Length: 217
Image (cartoon, rainbow, N blue to C red):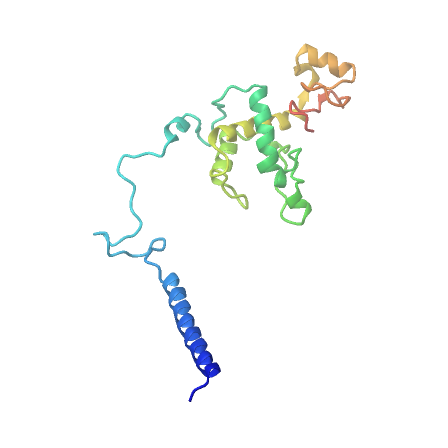
């Protein structure tokens, strides 16, 4: 006669076996899901492709409105009015996306360079000061060298806001006092800051205004 304990042990073993086989089946079923991997062939469609072409004559939502913000790479046009609001937006976006590599002052001394990776060029060199606005827009959109494209992270209007702020950074180290409005020249002559928020006092050196409209140096 089989004891109760032996019957219980056999039942537990059978249950464990069934559970193990069930889990194995589920794991394999999850691995072999009925799906298509990118660019894999498919028998469902007549052309045998799982990737479907775009419907003819369709455009991405919002892309037509953004077309007006695209300029040729060699163009120095600026398709947006430049005001303090645009510069403040550009400073904010620049500090988020650009400063880790290019530094807060645009001199290439960001945290990436400080940690041993390749240092990007300074915005204050003659080549980049003389580069057209379209060049900066193209680099932000498509990337350049070790810099990858930021088209997915930065919409076209914000790209121009960043370009405006970069131009302000460049201007801050090359502007002559005579080129500034009278009220800013008066502030500088008194040792004050030309920025809209006042800021710390900063005396100009060698006849040039050093502070940017956004408050950075």
